[in-house]
Length: 464
Image (cartoon, rainbow, N blue to C red; front, side, top):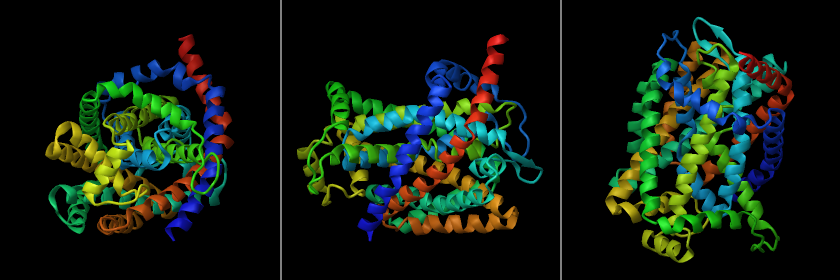
């Protein structure tokens, strides 16, 4: 059954590749590559204004920074660490180049979807601001059925992504301490429940403290590991570029298997790592108190930069500079771990752990990765809880259904701790593909709105 789902996964991503590259390139051209041309403007007006977001925020709303932190927290998860490692295992080092290409185009895609989320968001006293693909598909495209379908897939995806994240936490803790997976599931269900029961404000308050801390800690740990093998940095980059375009005959006899596999896993994990075009981050950005869509849209550019060009790249370099991708080293690691199968995604946890251990030592390396995965996974779970909550509100518009959803969500955390992660990754890719397709069609349909608002904003800036 897993092989059948994997085959469906491969086929369904073909239109996603086309839409991702077409939409990303199209918006890049129409905005004169805004994501590159205005990158320093983005840094100045996002990171440069962190400490200016101290004004009083309304109930059920977030500051611009809290919205970024929550979206970034849900974006940066095991996809950036375990997913990136899995991409290298299954698609080769060349998949990282395609991840970068996707990220460059993804910057402007995420900018566009956040802009539309702010443009078409709605507000009421009970729930505050609500926005995202469901709203610009309904209010912008006037397609109610498509909006409903997107919201339904989003709810199901939020439950599945919880399975992935908690599974990684449970595996990491078990490797480190021997504690059974279900015990970790029970503990983290309780922990997550304490946060999400407080709604948008508590989620935002948690994220703006936890996310910067976890990004800095992981960055420092990765830099330390990479620089213990400083002579391998240039060869690692060379391998990424050469492998991305390598053609060879696979076991199936199909020429070009390697490059197609690199593209598939690079884009699939790229989508997992930065979620540009997926339509999730705009949901939380829509809750931000800001007076112009462009002002929040540029936070999306920064979001992709941090998740893909910093976190994913650091992970890839950790794997490649420590020699973990080398076949001899790989076989030794597997034999010592008692794990078999090159394409087994469960191995990704072990491989990235061994990479950090090679630089930090057995105990410290394992502890570092476990703490990292826990932080990354918890913020991702909490962010996706908010996405699912907003989707439930869109469909039912009643608080009692949100409560039911939260109960199901917390129950899923327990179930996910003992689930089969290989099956979950494939299901997650399929659901992501469906969300990508619906959201990207909406972005392309509403492209004129994006371009007009962007030109109007920056023309006024130039005149002033």
